[in-house]
Amino acid sequence: MTALKVTIGAAGTVFFGSFLPWVAVAVPNAGTLDQSGGEFDYVRAILLVYQSGMDGDGVFTAIASSILLIIAFVAHAKKTLGSGMSIFMVLLSCGIALISVDDFLQFQIFAGDGLGIEISAGIGLYLVQIGAVVAITASIIAMRARDKN
Image (tube, helix red, strand yellow):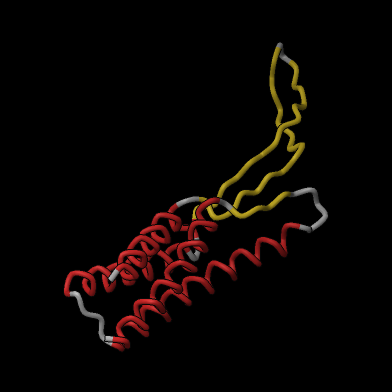
C-alpha cells in the first residue's frame, strides 16, 4: 500500500505542475520606446513570456492526474486494488508522461530557430514529467504487489 501513497503524491505533483509555467520564451534585445524629456529613446530590454500548462496540454494532464489521484486514494482507503484499475493507473500515468515528453520535445525543436529567441521548458513541465515517471513506477509496483497477494 506504500506504492499507492507514492502514486497519490506523484499524481498531486502532476496536478500542481499542470498549473505552473510549461514554457518560458525570452526575446533578447526586444526594444521598447521610452519617452523621457519629450524624446523617444530606444531601450534594450529582454521580453520574457511564460505560458502556463493550462493554456494547452496541462488541462489534459490535470484531468488525468485527478482521475489517477481519485483511483489511488480510493484503492488505498479500501486497502484493495482491482486488476483493471491497476492496469488503468499504469496506462493513465504513461499517457501523462507521453503528453509531457511530446511538449518538451516540441519546445526543444523551436529552441534553435536562429532568430535569437530562447525557448526553455518551465518548472511546471519538469514537475509533470517527474510526477509521471514516479506515478508509472509506483503504479507498476502497486500492480505487482496486488498480484502477489
